[in-house]
Length: 211
Image (cartoon, rainbow, N blue to C red; front, side, top):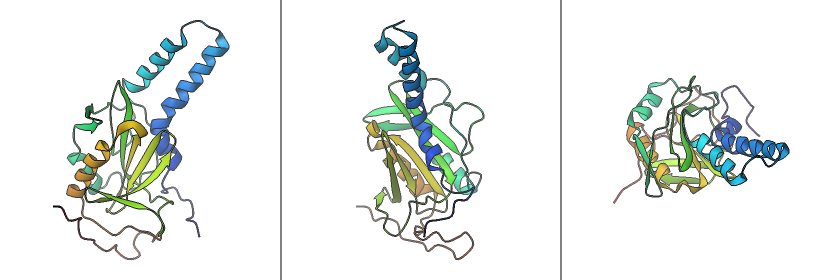
């Protein structure tokens, strides 16, 4: 039986919108340009649109995040690196436009679309006993794939940590964020059946052995 929607449910469309919205805006602006006539070179206009979404303060939509103000999310944010590695390139922190969502961080550069991390979101409805989970750096992730982006949800910690990454960003961001989560938060068994909070503590699981 599917989970009942609640105000604290995982806001999948809004999370993906964090990276996808600039692409939609680029398409809309391009269409307006076509309707207005050949006022300028299309290639130049596309370059201007791309630069605009990759520079300056990054506007992110607010999403329900019941655990965003918890000490666990603070521990994650305090441990995050100032830069992420994407295809051997370093992505610095992006400034967020005000009002910025709580417990949200972004990285990026003029060459790539942003990588966005949110902490404290609700449980994703896609998480169930048949979900294919991936262990990276000691953290267990659920991938929610969409055209152009992948949203990874860390499902074995006291709070859900969500990382939205462009498809062409490589594995560096996921690996580095995994290391932070594994160090900052104790592991727990993923909630594969949607147990409401307060109805039994999750069981601890041992960290992934390293060689």
